Amino acid sequence: MRANIYKKSHIRGHLTVPGDKSISHRAIMLGAIADGITSIDGFLTGEDCLNTVSCFRELGVTIDIDSHHVQVKGVGMYGLKPPERLLDVGNSGTTIRLMSGILAAQPFTSCLTGDESILCRPMLRVVEPLRQMGADINSPDGGRHAPLTIVGKKLHGINYNMPVASAQVKSALLLAGLYADSPTTIIESHPSRDHTELMLETMGAHISYSPLNFEKQRTVTIYPAQALQGTHIDVPGDISSTAFIITAAMLCPDSCVTIKDVGINPTRAGILDAYMAMGANIQITNQRLWNRERVADITVSTSNLHGIIIGGSMIPRLIDEIPIIAVAAAFAEGVTIIRDAEELRAKETDRIAAISDMLRSFGAEVKTIEGGMVIKGNTHLHGCHIDSLKDHRIAMAAAVAGMVADGNTYIDNAECVSISFPGFFELMDSLGD
Image (cartoon, rainbow, N blue to C red; front, top):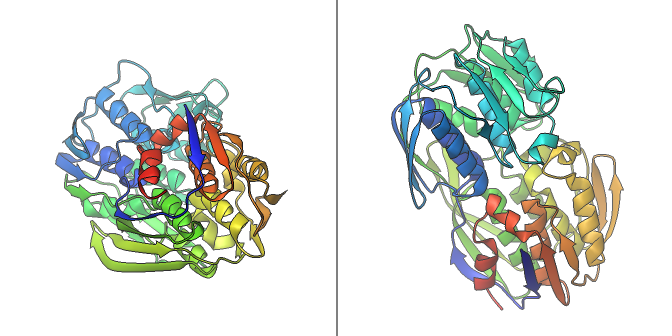
């Protein structure tokens, strides 16, 4: 699919965005191994989350979907059934890594695989600590990449210092820790997103963690469990999806948009802090809690931005939003430096290279550095022809750049946006001329 993007004179409106992808994944997984029914409202029906649904159906879990409402009939922690075929996660790194933690403790053998991108993504970061817990996980190349064959074993608790901030790895260990014979403690140098911890608490798990301080390490301990309890989960709007609309409203002239019911979990909302530091006109109102998750309405209007330095403890809080932050930086006054983001090289694409190449195609001045990039802002950008490289965030970032650049922009392989934001292009078209 090729998307044609035209320069917009403004965008305006009140809207909601699709449900949070991270929370939607976890609601299916924890609901599947809980006792009783878990009902989910606001579920993201994007390809990644639907792949999680397919995998758990293959494991014997009944999951009914009616639009964005989902009902999961939990089978309990020990009720999953051996799969009759490979468990295909598609493009979802969250699915393959988190499921590895659950499947490592099951009394059967399973195999996780995925698309071409997944088969290239690093898996030792989750395989090695699970092996320390007693897991039997292997692949044709020794566990470096999928497909992963998992032979269920009895697990034991460990103390694990995370070498790289990764909510996926942390979550896999927490899920495995539910089945272990002793507590599992994870130490992070900087806190990563904590949706798994909050949902485990909601479902009755015994979990403890040190206070949230982004400048200090954080310790999380999960205790062995006998059961989780199904519950009702309201999924807030995805801050990562909201980021594209926020950025478009900041950059397009004469614009003002309100996005309702957005998740602003502090471990995820680093983009709001970064944009406010850049001078964005952003208002956050109607703050409240949904299932221990912070939710709010966000209003954003046309802004005069300036460059900043983004790095250190900020990176885990906005790692998925760096593609669109880089677009904002290209239109900001001065220079923006993004550093300490080596993790971007292990995403759907090498996102440091993909972002840099994309912005250069628009005429921006970008220097790639170790773990990041230097972007000279306030450059006159022009429309261009972009290949998304089948990376949904690159495609959407390019679309926002195209809405502000002169001339027309064409994005190939644009269908990949359905991974996280079904209806993205239609929504953006509806917001203005």
